[in-house]
Length: 299
Image (cartoon, rainbow, N blue to C red; front, side, top):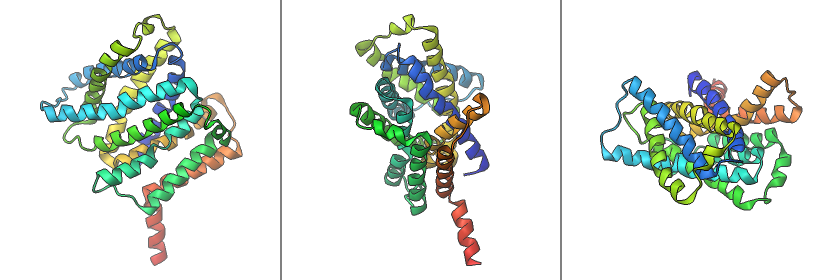
């Protein structure tokens, strides 16, 4: 991964870190399926206008649109619905810890579904260290909540697994820019979610929601979906699915550093230890530090 890739991941971690807060506000008034539809529908419309403005060519073959529909199912429809429902019953902290299992699932999926993104011992050490760092950083006390809402916790884990499958599938879209992949996926997500919302949910609730809930849904769409997926698909194209999923380790780090920078919050020793474990994990996954040490030892 290049310096540009790491910068993109850091920006993405801020955008997706905010999604937990936006969702917690919106889901109190807007049901999960309707919120998921609002998120992807608004994002798809904005990106479609942008793609049209830059004259980006959309796919013209049915096979590409079928792949985009499958990606939409695993990247958006399933995980967004499950996570929004889960956050009705659990804290943001625990949801983000369980979401950090995405890279663990991603390594297994990439190993099984690709020929050039295989499991390595360094990557395994990095992933375990990263997950441990997330737990320490957010607070081990939150682990005491495990088992309180088992179905919600299982929903978060299922969402993480779904994200991992979607990330690996995203590598199969060839010849299209991140703008087109993001727009196509979000458009197909809207198509898949619309009949489900009309049949099983209460879409009229969005019309009576408070201004805070509406702005939270719009923020989910514009920042945590439209902009975030442009960055995400670029990272996947440049660095692979497993490396892109590292972002779930960086989300809590970004949240804490933003708190320090903007709210003058104080970082304690536990949080420093958690961030150190995460930085060690990403160095192990990146692999350059290990190769440098091995080369120095040989000479």
